[in-house]
Amino acid sequence: MPGDLTRDAITITLVTGVLIWVLPLIVGTYTLTVLAIYGMLGLSLGLVWGFGGILCFGQAAFFGLGAYAYAIFAINIGESTVPMILAVLVPAVFAAFLGALMFYGRLGDVYLGVITLVVTLILFKVINSTAGPQYVIGNARLGGFNGIPGFPTLNVPGIPDAYIWGDRYFQVCAVLLGLVCMLVTALLRSSFGRIAVGIRENETRMSLMGYDVRARKTAMFAIGAAIAGLAGGLFANWAEIVTPNLFSLGQSAEIIIWCIVGGLGTRLGPVLGAAGLAYLKFLLGQQAVVDNALVTGLVLVLFVLFLPKGVVPALSALWRAGAGRRPRGRVRQRRRPPRRERLNG
Image (tube, rainbow, N blue to C red; front, side):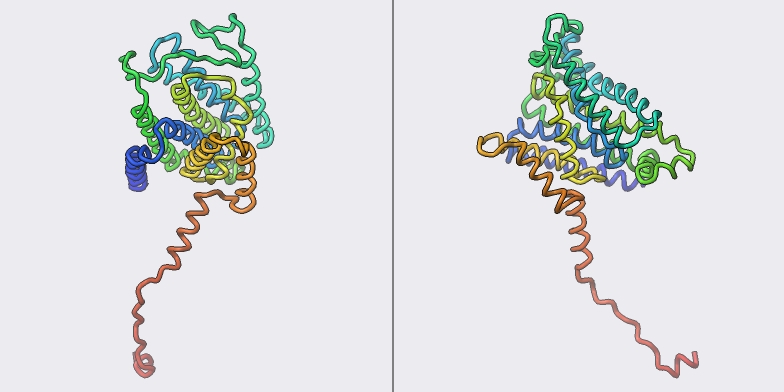
């Protein structure tokens, strides 16, 4: 197991390094930055849903909370180090509280999905209704539907005037995505991750074996929210403005589609699904003939009908099938001795 973890860490490091050097030669770093952020956001739901078995329709809520937490604290503090930490902690604490209410309340999967969706819509409605000057947190005006612009962006820790932007910001986001992938890999290879997968497969059996299923599902829910909050804080730095659209129903639906297209139950699938579909949306945004939502819905329908397991599981199956058909070296058969020798022996 430690050897597998080391091999995965080396692989992720090499792939991250190659992508940092190669992809900017093909696509601009401004676009690559948001693709890396969306990949992290997709991975957050892929962990919770694909490995924890928790269908969350409100991952956008934690994404938006992370973005708003960063913007509000960056305005009040004046630099980015503490706000980035709070962008992770605020969604994680909120998710732990919400998860405890849901899981210790023994709600079914359908009700979990409904509650997480309703919480996201409530946050969207509340933030959208804060346009007046009385809605302030410290020095930060919430701004309602106009959002919060003009907050300090990411800087070198301890040096508020040393801002990180452009190519350097893309490299930071790519490295953070690689680190999150390593942490998710380590988590899934640990006893906690194996028990989480067991809970996904048969919650009753794991409970009878003595595991506190509700506490472990709450912890998994909070970890996924922390990753989404980190993505939200990075997105706020990239966009340099946060708006209530981060909590929108469309944002929540897109994250679910990323995971379905990329492949649930895999670490790479949600990342590729998020980056691929987000880049497709970016390309479609350059024309006015076809609507983005129509193409996204069509992609989802086609994948559900013809590739229900997603891209990565399908490619893995093709790879295994091809490897199984490879011609192997001729096996030298041992010559059987004559019948008389066999009887005498």
